Length: 366
Ligand code: KG4
Ligand code: ZN
Image 1 (cartoon, rainbow, N blue to C red):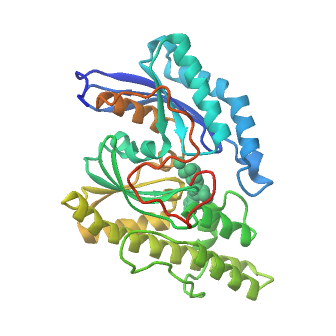
Image 2: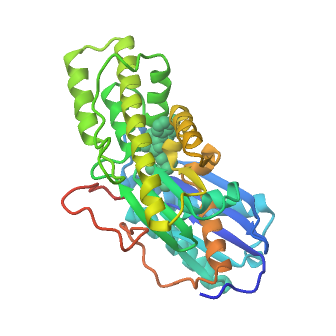
């Protein structure tokens, strides 16, 4: 793993693991500075809204239809031709297999046609490295990844060196927000609508459980909270606007309490494993856009003397700039790409982490 002699890399990134069709061009200078030259994200929200969640077949078909145009737009925005690139990076997993195949095969075709290196990448690694692009955050840091498919605390020790300290044993946090929204009759995607409703509500009206709070380690659980919320909602049906706001606020307060507790516990796990406190806590994933969560984490980090880094919401959510950037970081670190890497629905970032047997997400992004 010898780093290549310092040089700049410009990569095309492609992201199709869930319901965003995305392409971006990013340059990494020899000194490690990153520049996003273009960043196109086409959301499929409308295609899935009627179903209250992402339908894998619809997602795959929508990626096929949109991807060529999205890539063309990303190149045009960056004022680049394929021949100006140093490589093509694409998400190979984890995610919905149909969409992954569309993105990876398209990247493979472009790489073969232009004789460029192909970099199949782990989507979680791209989330993990975003802070080095947006904030030049120094390693090692603690990553809190909270999205619709993932809820993890990961020690990011270096490019290609990740240790999972905790994960959810059932639902992902974003999934819990989405299910809460559905239960309360709020529109898809649930997270932002629950946050909006919660702003008008009383977070103390319903005493909802805080699963795993205070338990050693840094694992999460949200299914008990979801069930408790459902029972309260059923007991108060039909729900008034105030009931919905109070339930949303009570759910959000409980969820954030759990995240803060698990994150604090992960500071100790991190120190034990890495030998020092993290330089920073980095939030990533769609739920990191939640302002109440950001405020709570800001306080938590201030009290612990650790910097809190929250990249712009657009780069916390799924995008292709993070894919291109992760590819460039790997090239700069001298990590050889594996062009034969297949698309993988499941792909843990830390291969040594214990599998959560008998529990955990059964969904496509588990
Ligand atoms: O990272 P992301 O764009 O896609 C993946 O799931 O990989 O995350 C989407 C998730 C959804 O569950 C959405 O409801 C949630 O992030 N989300 C939020 C907020 N904005 C998005 N959850 C809570 N509060 C928000 N403001
Ligand atoms: Zn994601």
